[in-house]
Amino acid sequence: TMKLLTGYLRPDAGTAIVNGHDVIRDSLAVRRSLGYLAESAPAYPEMTVGEFLDFIAAMRGYRTPEAKRERIGRVVGLCHLQAVLGQTIETLSKGYKQRVGFAQALLHDPPVLVLDEPTDGLDPNQKNEVRAIIRQLAAAKAVILSTHILEEVDAICNRVIIISRGRVVVDETPEALHARQPGARLDEIFRTLTRGDL
Image (cartoon, rainbow, N blue to C red; front, side):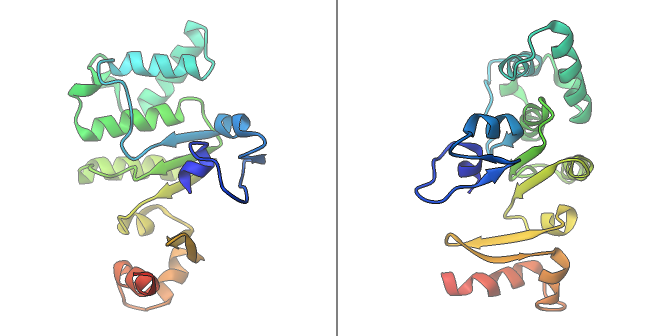
């Protein structure tokens, strides 16, 4: 689903609308509207963090040094990357690599963010930082978050969609999801809802 929304895959049938743009008829406008953090946070390992963000800024259309400096400075501060700007990406911890991926997704200030497992591999402090950033951004942006870590649902989400074998089995608030089985943990509720699809 995320690859269809972000233009990596073309749908066999149907379509989707992102920020008012059709993913088939206006895929370039969709990509301009999106910030995407893939699960593995791809980057050029031999580049420094600063070089990588400068490259992404140029690809996103920021040509002047002032425009790049302003955009990069904003995401560096938001993602707490000041200490590693001169470090090559290959030498970073997984947590810092995730933050760099998060920074590139935010660089052009898109109205829609698609985040695939944004806290995967982060220590508890880093998870809390990323969650705080997501909550802050969600006040002004649509944020689609994919996760298999069900604690993220309670920590971040205000809407839950569970897809099992290509079929939506739940589309509701976290509170409504908990109310399905009062007192049960989310992983138990998830197993109940998807057991028939095994």
